[in-house]
Length: 182
Image (cartoon, rainbow, N blue to C red; front, top):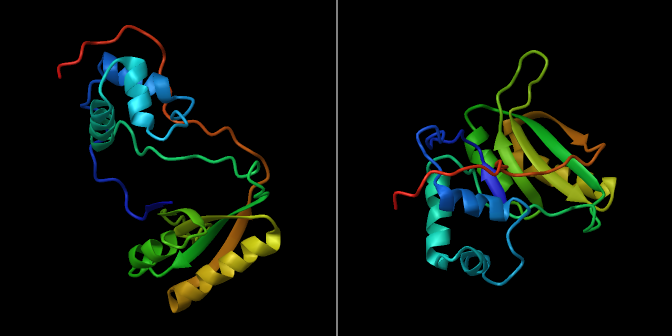
């Protein structure tokens, strides 16, 4: 589950210099984390560094804004969820942060975030992704969100996926790397 109702207050990563070990970690995880009980230890073994250093490097890169997050990205279609609906909500601006947090905590919301309105064409400021095995299941989940939002919501819609897009994280070219200072 991921919840993001505020823009990141972290550094944009512009002052962070990736060193060889950081680049190795990113290159080693571009296709995903190892599917083991301790992926940090597995990565460390592959790269010859301790597991706690692997985790610390990911944390530093995340804090610097180089990485937004490290998270599972399931293939919903392979899991049987053929109906994927981005629910979009027109929420009172004074309530959107609180309500976004609540919506993001629902067990069936895979991600929830705040976005700017583009009046008069786009009035929605809260987005919440839900998945279902049927369109009815997605609509039932949207109804639960609507009930939770109550009077803070003045409109909503469900935008269904029409294609599977390639999902990828950070990608680096293999090239010469600066040395690590740590």
